[in-house]
Image (cartoon, rainbow, N blue to C red; front, side, top):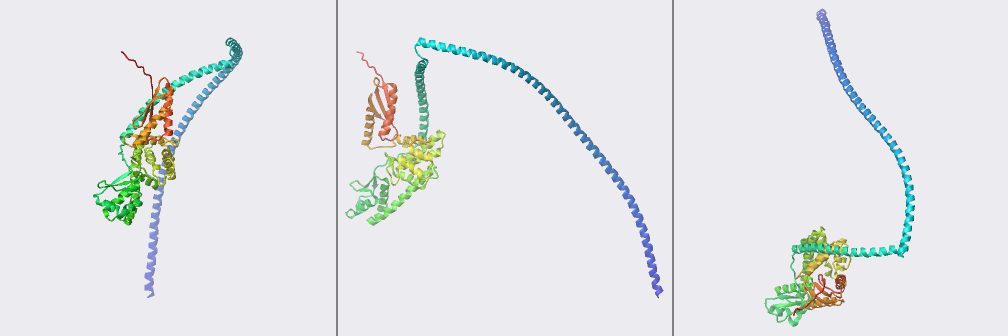
Length: 511
C-alpha cells in the first residue's frame, strides 16, 4: 500500500524537476537573445547620439566662429575710429600750439598798442582840459553852470514833448475806451430788459361796496384803531367810492395790512381779537413769502451757497424801493448786467452776478444802523462769510472804500446803468427841481463860468466858460474839479456827466 503511494509521488517530483530544468534552459536562451538584442540596440542609440553631439558641436563651432568674426570686425572698426580720432587730436593739438604762439604774438602787440592808447589818452585829456578852459574863458561860465543851463533847456524841451505825447495818448485812449465801453454797455442793456415797478407810500384797498367801510371802522372806531395798532399803518376811510387807503412809509407793514384786511373782509368776522389773530397770521405768511422770494431769486439767477440770512434780506428787497425803483428788480437787473459785462470782459460772470445781487443788501437790514448802505452791506457780507472780492465790490460801488478787484467797477457801472436809465427811477418834484438848481449853482460858483445848464433830468451838466477868462488846460481841470465837488457835496442817483464848453464867437451885422 505504501509502495503504491510512494511511486506516484516520486514520479511527480522527477517530472517537476525535469520540467523546471527545461523551463530554466528555455528562459536562459531567451534572456541571452534579449541581451544580445539590447546590446545591438544600445550600440545603435550610442552611434545616433554621437552623431547628434557631433552635429551640435559643429553648429556651435560655426556660431562661435561667426561671433568671433563679428567681434573682430567691430574691434577693427573701433581701432580704425580710434586711430582717426588720434590723428584728429594730434592735428588739433598742433593747431592749438600754433594758435597759442599766435596769441602770444597778438598779446605782445596788444600790450604795445595799449601803451600807445594810454599815451594818446593822456594827451587827449590834456587837450580836453585846455579846450574847457578856453571855452570857459570865452563864455564866462564854469562847466557846472553850463551843465545846469543845458539841463534846464533839456527839461523844458522834454516837458513840452511829454505833455504833447501824454495829450495824444489821452485822446487816443478816450476814443478807444469810449468806443469799447459804449459797445459793452449797449450790449449789456440790450440783453437785459427788466420792468420797473413804481411804489408809493400808500396802498389802495378795493372793496365791493361801501357798506364794508362801517364794519371795518367798527363801533366807535374800535376795529380801525385795533387794525392800526396791530399793523402800524394809518387806515384812511373817506368818501372815495369802493376804496380804503393804507398809508405808511414801510411797504412790508402796508402789505401785512392789505392782506389782513383782505382776509377779514372775506371771513366777515371783524373785531379786535380777530384782527390781532389775523394780523399775526399774515405777518408769519409775509415772512415766509419773503424767504420764498429770496430763494426764488437766487435760484433764478443761479447764485448758490448764500447764507440763509442773506437770502431773507434779498426777499425783503421786494418791499423796498429807491427813488421809486423797486429794490429787488434793481438788484436782479444789476446782477444780470454785471454777468453780461463780465462775460464781455473775459471775467467770471457767476461772481459778477453774485456781487450785483448783493450790492444793495445794506438797504434792508432790520436794525438799519447809521452807516452808508454800501459799508453796511460789505459788513453783512463779511459776517456771512462771502469772499473778499465780493465784499469789496459791495462796499466800493459808491466809492466808500477803495476798489481792490475788477468786480468793483463792474458793479458800480451796472448799478449806475440800472438806476440812471430813463424811467427807472422817479423823485419828488420839489427834490428833483432843487437838485437841478443846486447843480447849476455849484458850477456857477467857479470863476470864469458864464452859464450852466442841467439837462437830461440832471444826468448831464453843461458849463459854458468865457474864452478870454480860461484857457484849454484850465477848462479840462475845471470839469474834473466840478465832478469832484459834486461827488463830495451832493446826493444824486446814477452819475452826472460834466461838459465844459469854451468857444470864441465873433458877431457882425451887415446893414
